[in-house]
Image (cartoon, rainbow, N blue to C red; front, side):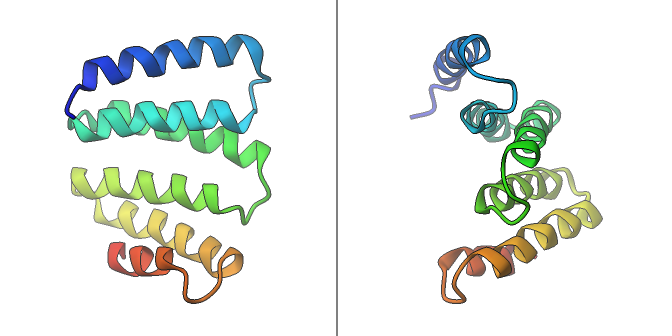
Amino acid sequence: MGAYSKALEFYEKSIQIREKSLPPSHPDLAQSYNNIGQVYHDIGDYSKALEFYEKSLTIRQKALPPNHPDLAISYNNIGQVYNNMGDYLKVLEFHDKALKIRQKALPTNHPNFASSYNNI
């Protein structure tokens, strides 16, 4: 709907509650950081998007097995930000990480493969 400031307001309320009630490596906290990163990505504030996507990734790396599909999502999102910033070596690095996880974690006909190949 384009109500980015409203989305940020509610995501930040969610973060405040989750930071108080969940351990710092809980996947729900990672999802909240990811959501905020997505808003910043959508409005073109790529440095803020990276900040929140990287927070999400750090938590997911601690909380999830190394081939969990949510890690691939984090790598994909970071790769998309680097694409918007024009850092194509970083784009390839992060999308390749996402693809490798998807190859191990998902069936070969999963639609996320098409996304990975398209992004690379």
